[in-house]
Image (tube, rainbow, N blue to C red; front, side, top):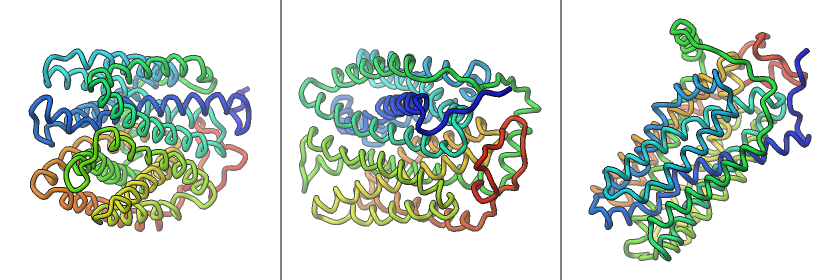
Length: 416
């Protein structure tokens, strides 16, 4: 007889939620904490803005290209062990990165950090969907994404302040050490998986699952949404520091990092979006945060610093809410192929961060901040159009699958 899944409100759910907060925190702190340092890298290594952005793009690009392989490893050895190894290894590569004598060797450390980090997000989505009851998946996944938002905020602020006080090498090493402590905390907190079933992949089964996923009416478009939204979001965050350090603002490094405290808004919006998606359905809610994202971009081209700060808050809330809703939609709709669908969604997400985030550097070089905002706005408008089309996609038929047991609350109306 199968054991019950983790219920919302139970001690196991609280423990899992805290573990997922820790995992999300570490992932985004290690991946994106270096964004405020891009202008520093330009000076220290004599780089252009687009070359400095490789500190982010190399890690996200490597992560994107290895997510499917990481998903296969997760299918064989389990979600929890994969995440533990990924957290420990990515922390160690971050600790050694500041020892790099040149830009090439620094990027090599970032490459291996991204390689290790691939094991976290793809395993996290599958771990939650397998271990948590259906009615609580949205809440648990929303908390994981909330941890990502807090990690992104804290990583940026910590890097900025420590860089100003003790240099960027000290800041990066210290971030790696903190992440290592969090890796140990995750090891202790995350409940042992009770519903994981070991899977092996043959080429035939792999391509069969891909065919099923890409034949779906919504999933491929949700992957494209991830690509566009993440590309626009990372573009703004990559080059906002350049804009704020230059006239007319001429802020210092620590103050720029302080503005990114607004990343915390994403933790609240992702939790709200998870609840709203569960109540009203992703089809009816996805367009709302994307619209907010676009309105936030309009604020970023206004001269007052207050308008810029408000714009950063709005686009952060919009991105994390949209990401939360799209993630929940993928996890529910994929059903029998959740791990592969999660890997493809996240691959699209991080390819968007890598390719479009670096492409935004050319917009900065040739058209300045208005060019960066215009580039991001074009991506968000495309994403908004797709979300409006997706609102008309019908729910998947309610078909029981042996590997995805139906929960007591599952019905046609609750499956997007």
